[in-house]
Image (cartoon, rainbow, N blue to C red; front, top):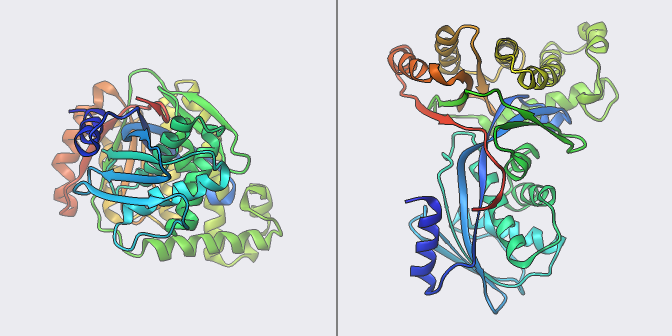
Length: 382
């Protein structure tokens, strides 16, 4: 059964009538541009064909009633006329409640709704299952009630819900690509202006995501430390964000900076330059150039930003040995585990899968999870 079949059937069985419409919002993978978003830099993600689906209908009262198929059909119900507070025991409910609460602040011209949610974005893999859920719920309410909010507003709404209601500090990339993704394209995002440019993906290239299945410890504390180090670097240059520092400026005074801060700054500045170059390489169909930029990005994350771990480095090396100059591979996401992303000619996918299956466990004792994805459309009706 498709996700849409599951949510529509569950809706009918649970609520006793048919859903009015069904929407979807995808997860994402970032091809290049890591830890640049909160420095007002550039990122180059694509939406993937793993998504959250919401079947929904209006109610004639002011209540929101939700069922999460993937959480044992747990249910939540809350009123639009009372303060929307956190749910004590159901974390998934807080994403829904947060989105609805922040939507009310943007455009309160909506009433109650019944919603059924289901998704197949792998959780805990850094593929933005939470952003996918936030955008899908926002899209459902917006579409049901014809709210005058565009998809950028839905993305910002999801980010606000996650930051302020759920309490997780994230940049805007995840929600924006889920809202604005385009089939067969990546999206170059300027995280300062929220300007976007669709970048065509070369034909016959697969987006492979490989989860290292490394247990991720210390992620939050290390992430916060990196943000603080970047802010320290920005203060040194008397600018608001590292986006405003030129590489030549940095190189002239690098010796005056704390050595660790200098490494963090170097990563951000060079990663921004690589991301812009990668958008051009991808648009030109130059997989060899893209591969070089992805390799440089990974080395920078390993040596300057220090967020990779040995199993991730092993995965990257295995894939790189297999594809040579015919594509690229690097760690993607916050770091300390998670996934690697590879751009690989479709005819090489199975040889990459076989090489990883043969060597990764042997080298690390861990078993990978392998996803072959397609750059996909953003949120909409399904």
